[in-house]
Amino acid sequence: MRKYFYQFGLLFVLMALLASCSASKSRLQTEHESRLSSGKLIPTTPPITRINTASPEEMPEDKRVYNITSFALDQKGTRYKFGGTTKAGMDCSGLIFTSYLQENISLPRTSRAMSLEGDRLELAEVNIGDLLFFETNKNKKVINHVGLVIEIQPGHIFFIHSTTSRGVIISSLADGYWFEHFVMARRLI
Image 1 (cartoon, helix red, strand yellow):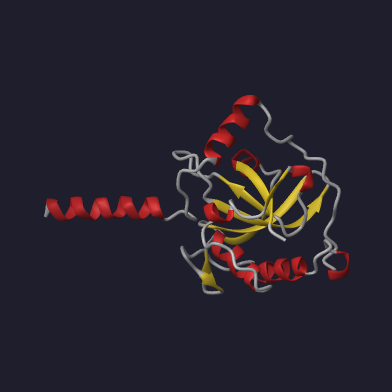
Image 2: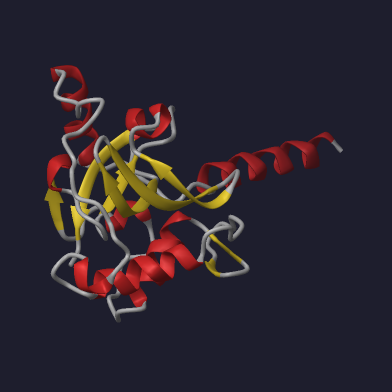
């Protein structure tokens, strides 16, 4: 009996380690740690002034951004499901993966792999449709979460993402938790 309990416990621990939005050690860990130690972390209220009017004509140059963000917003309220990519449930990278597929843009399926795509941005350069990457596991310094920027207001960058506790929601990068775990932003289109 003890043997089965031990095996089940190991299986449970292994599943728990794999149940994030996917992450593994990367060269980004060193970059993030050096930013933290050098004090070059982003300011509390970033100098952001662009506002999403939710009109395709007034979105960034590429109208595909409007379609991608609109699809993502339609998923708001969807429950979290590890590995999910449907309205029945999705994880953070599944939300981004399916949103970009609306414009036939194929992305890697994990947040860590997505973080290696496109162009890295300074926070002041972030625009609607860009991706924000986070390290949310305090035991490992690896990217394991991603969100899609949907609106920008002075002092706030709003992004949509899927959380394990609340499913697909909208958050602000100015929120303490997300600001503290933010690593980088990237533009794919």
